[in-house]
Image (cartoon, rainbow over all chains, first blue to last red; front, side, top):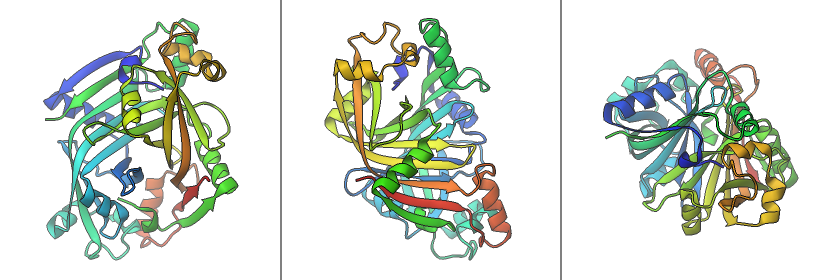
Amino acid sequence: MSEKQDHDSEYKELSGEAAREKIAELAKGIHIAMMTTVAADGSMSSRPMAVQDKPFDGTLWFLTRNTSEKIDEIADDQHVTLNFADTSASKYLSLKGRATVSEDRAKIKELWNPMYKAWFPKGEDDPEIAVLRVDVHEGDYWEATSGKIVMMMKYAVAAATGGKIEVGEAGHVLVA
Amino acid sequence: MSEKQDHDSEYKELSGEAAREKIAELAKGIHIAMMTTVAADGSMSSRPMAVQDKPFDGTLWFLTRNTSEKIDEIADDQHVTLNFADTSASKYLSLKGRATVSEDRAKIKELWNPMYKAWFPKGEDDPEIAVLRVDVHEGDYWEATSGKIVMMMKYAVAAATGGKIEVGEAGHVLVA
């Protein structure tokens, strides 16, 4: 359950620089995002993706294998949603964007780091590496007020007090 | 990056009882799932949802507000994807299903617990409560071999050793 307006929480509308800063703050330290794409049968496929450790500026970059299923899905439908979860701190961030795929060797070199050897043991010159670029335009977020108290505990307290305590902050981020 | 077949990990195809057991094992202790639906503009909307603390049998049940955006999205397109993340243990589970909405008062009573008071301070008789049922048919999962060592550390080790160590287990689950 839960929709932004259902929460007994502070709700914010952020845009531009404030939105980008909020996204950067929420995504910081989250190394894996779930990327969701539209599959050929109309269902939505998700898979974990390693996130580049760079300050958020509106564009997210990934390296992937050019034979992977998501490449075909993006060719058919550019919509992607990227979900970042920090379960221990009860922070959730969902970003919507458009994905494009290239095999720009200079960009692959720029993005490459030794961690990718786990997927591409042949190294950065592996011809199967593709660059996946996501231009993020908007998103939503939900976070508990204290990173140390899990959301469910807050909800339990809220329930005990009739749902009238502040359980956290939620909001919409417009990147452009 | 990452697609099931890209990982240097054990890959399993599970179905029926084995699939349901695997899902139950992975979802256990995860109180919040991200539910993704197809929005009217073709993008995909996600939001955190409280998960019922019940053993997985193929169907997931949620309480939600009948005025929420997801209700309209599901009326237009029944596809939903539910993502469960345990970031500290590096476990990720993505389930595909079909959603249906009802206002079955007996079911609301059955699913109700005091936690929901945080969203519905009026209690279980609030006329705005709806039941969201998701019949799960398949999914994918990714998990690190040891719950105590985060995936990224494993990847770093894999990178240092040429990507040739076992980084975990991944697989496909067919519920039916």
